[in-house]
Length: 97
Image (cartoon, rainbow, N blue to C red; front, side):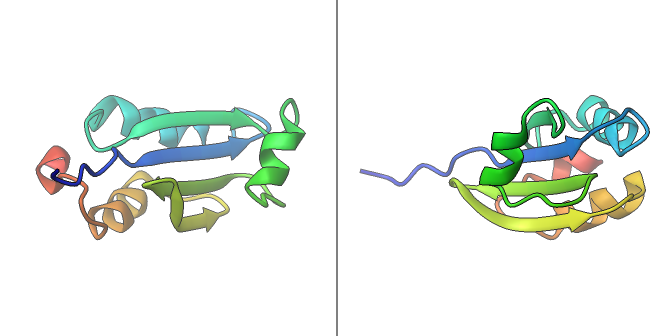
């Protein structure tokens, strides 16, 4: 049986709209096929934040096959976020074009 890679999941933990949500939503709109997107309000979901060891917000996490493979805490520009994500496989790099 051939192995099947799961679609990566990009998560954003935030507490207010100014904490990365705009960049996250813009990437989701521009590149919907690179990952599944999940935004989590850390204040409203403290147990989820604790499970992923999120201490500060905003925190971006990328999960591949259920395992964390990239993390960024703090503000990030859309271009830097795209650049970091395009380095990871098996993300479809053509989705960024």
